[in-house]
Image (cartoon, rainbow, N blue to C red; front, side, top):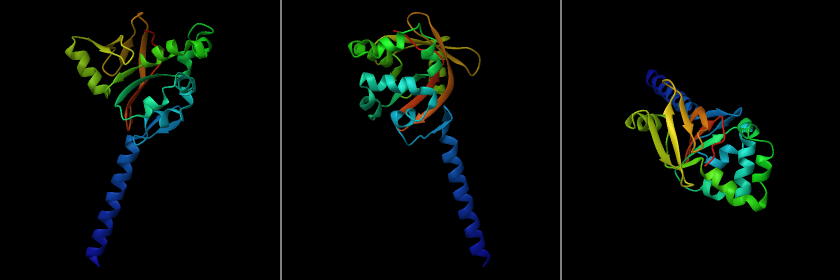
Length: 184
């Protein structure tokens, strides 16, 4: 009887550990859980903070790409970031005749590979305070530390975004939530 109790207790403990580990990997974005077993698109469509980005990804025809194996690192601007662009910018980019320009802007927010906070900060340290990385679009983004746990991203025009939510792991990469739209 005592052995049965110990076995049941150990099994219950293992279940609690597994459940805790699974929950720890899930990150909340836009009041919704982002699950590491889902891909970038499957998670992003559930984020209330990224409805504009999701609409733009659909309009640019990038859904299949961002559902592929990757891995990708997506710097995902929140809705407020799009709203802070000059009036009419988003509407203009979403027009069918501007699809190539929209695609360029969106792919400028993507790095090939999986770059979490640790990988980005190591690259910044190796670059003596700055790291330049080529985006899928072809132009570079510059990464800098702004304190011990804040990474900033600068585009080619000098606009600077802060990463507000780090390391949202996906089955095919990682999402870093940012507060500004980056422009090539």
